[in-house]
Image (cartoon, rainbow over all chains, first blue to last red; front, side, top):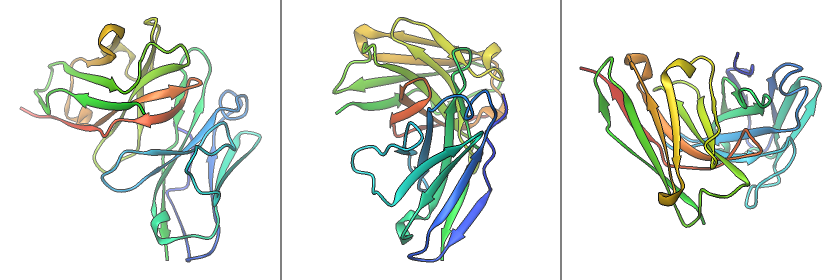
Length: 111
Length: 119
């Protein structure tokens, strides 16, 4: 079970938009619409920001949006703010046998 | 509002068994809507899913850890537990417990507990 592939780092300027990709296979992202994204600030527990590919939990800014095409899911953050600087992880359902695969993580730097 | 809290030793000797418990408060872990999971994060590294369990006791393990992992649930205490045997320094990590929605989506996390494997 290999981790989902994410870029190690991305950066963007205040107010700009960035997109983080998450690539899996036809057995996980490509098959199930159970992709989620997490934001993690240093020393803190991860926080769910996107679930079921495109949905946001209550209280999460609409600046965060998710999408999926084929075996690749994406997280877009628009109107970058300083507090968006964090690590971001994706995850996907993999079926009844194993259940979960998590991405390698992407560090977002806000310039 | 459900809150999850990990508990257990912060230091474990190599070759011994790491044991952690997650206690839920403000909600029941007997709900048929959720699984319950463990995720870990070595210092400076990414997240790794370890295992998940349903309130009925059905378990799902990361294949890379399956031979060393046991997960159990005690609905009477609103607790679920993790045991990881034959630990090495590579098992040093912050261990999180979490509520799992639709098999793989962690919507409620504990604060995490650092477990160090060292003699």
